[in-house]
Length: 468
Image (tube, rainbow, N blue to C red):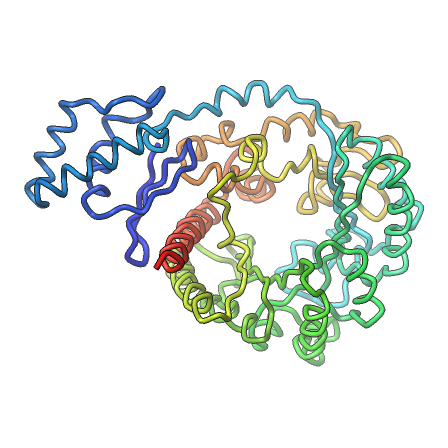
């Protein structure tokens, strides 16, 4: 499968199965477009059919000089010879064995607090309560969760634990205890924990920053952008004062103190700020260097929900952001935007490309009372309750359903050029919009495809600049 598109003056050709990406001229671009429907996928590098090439060349020679057409065909054949164009998708054959793999758990999302000190209007967690009761995780429950992770991680050495909520800093004492406990178990079990934290910053102070800089591999800082945007969607629980005014100075100080360690300023854009590129620029202007802003996912009846008619404007916004991203990089004041970071060299392993985040199998969420769910977005939905930290996973049927969730199990993904970059998208979004985990959230798909196209164009633009 070949995917072609033009962006910011670049003619880009993606060979989906091999992962190869090519920036070509007009002639080669048009030639590949004419060849692809008849060539399709090749079992192995081989010569393109002479008759087909002659037919396509005659068409092109009506528009382009004969010498340019001949050079284009030489270039195309060299890509075929290298196994970088019109290649066959071999991964579908691999998926049968992949389904049989032994399941190991490598990551937990610990809901240390089902409570929050902000009242975000779009919160999927119902202001931290997950449609249930307010609760804080005890140290004993957290210990059992870490022991469960160690016991179910097989030979995998590196394990990940995200402290999540609600707002995890509302249970900060237990977070510190669990980090200490995890560290105490590493040597004995030949494991290494990578702890991360997601916070709204209201309770952030010097002690928290110092501890996180020692122990947290990554910290996600929740902020939605410009002050008016942030405060409209992320009010305090009392409705008084500006959450932006409370947290931004703290986030700026914290980001500087990370000293090369990972952090992300992470925002959510809604129908109220479809000009979200301005919010990303605002993050950069505040001095943040690592950031992400995600589209809200909400029922269409919500006033802030993104609707199908908003998609064209959103796609244009990603194009605008990509141009600004390149501009700032070249000016020496660049930043990292999560969705524009893409690996064109090796990419994720085959298993990752096929199955995505591993929710329900390699990645589980743990409630304050120790229940296990496929991920944080399923918490509170009893039909997805998989077990608990005392007994482990008892609903293996749920685990096995998620185990089979891959790009070939999803009709919409099988012939999509983005399938090896997005790995089939979010199972929770699929379930919430279509009632099953093997469908796809269509609005999210359109945005993801545009982000991938922009990310590849950025690579081309920056590589071209470096080569000059």
